[in-house]
Image (cartoon, rainbow, N blue to C red; front, side, top):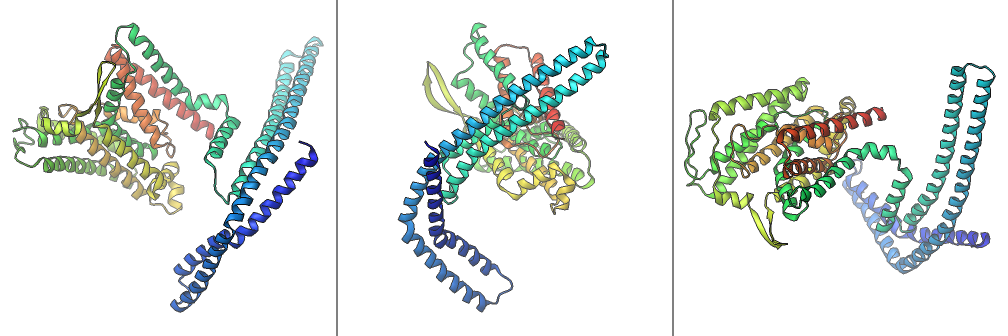
Length: 543
């Protein structure tokens, strides 16, 4: 394409943009402005009812006229937009190509100049040494000059890359203007990929994803080794469903403790909360008379009650008790500024003592088989490669919990306040956020998640005062591996979910390969310390 033709396309594109804006200004743009004016008048506290009525009548009349104008120009706007987008594609294909060519030539020149200047510095260093200059002094001068040279070269290359990126961004912004603020899915995807490639740095990538890459390599190793050891195929649908089933209840504990870690805290009472809710659930849903008495009361028999009532009672009591103990710990943290490590450690010990004293450590036994199958059973999907495939029902409540947690964290004011308080309590307080209410809200939310998870835990195993031993460490570790920072204010729900699945998969793989249970703790410990170390490095780099 010749320069004259290129300039002609640019001129024509500008004319089409101006024509589009002129038509939209009379219709779509005017309609949007009037809409805002109508809202302003409706909520105005300075206008009387009569004044509002008169202004609104004029605005509605103007709005109707703008709508009519929009409809009248609809076909012409669509034609102009289509032509403008076609011209934009032609124009920016040429412009981006020219900018790339120009900047790539500059980069090649920068590199050549850098290599020549580096050669000169090294030759000067050799001459200095030969002439008797102190080797230490000459070496220091060489190092300083090389550093300055490398910095200048990097800066020049980054500037050229920035110019190439600007040309691409200019095309995207122009197209968005032509569509009146609307974006294209394909364009959004291309932009995201382009931005990622432009900003990609190997060191940052390894810092962010190094742990996940190591874990991925470990899983690939397990998948290859399992058949060689005679353990069978690891990567099968039944095994994946089993991992997800084992992750389902643990997901609730991670979602609960994730909020506290986001506030730069933690929760050591998770395991005891699990035991508390599981024991209560086991007592209520046990088939027949319980053998366990609780603080000398009982034994009870709830078989005569309707199933729905028993389930509701077990779930509600489990949630209420977990929320009460979580609120108890939260009060000391929110009001007296006691670190959650201490307040939740105290809660853990209190629950532990009450449970063992109350039940004498006796397991409550299994729950009613009909109820267990209702919520904790599996649906038969069919046979695959001669193997029966079943879908665990416990996955469903876990998915619902993830959706709810995601909504709270990302779509509510409370969720935004969590990030603000976790990032900087003082700044959050100055901006009008109640640190006390947010902290208490997070503790209460955690208690609700623990209560539901503890209720469901009883469907997996016989509940006792020792149920959930060590679950708090798994939940905390899952959050840290998932990228929720102990420094506060950083992390996503998706990270906690991935962390739970990673940890559960790790345990399952090691068990599948027949690795000793004690050695499994070594693997977990290494992953945890690596995750925290990487988090600390990222935090220090940001500072």
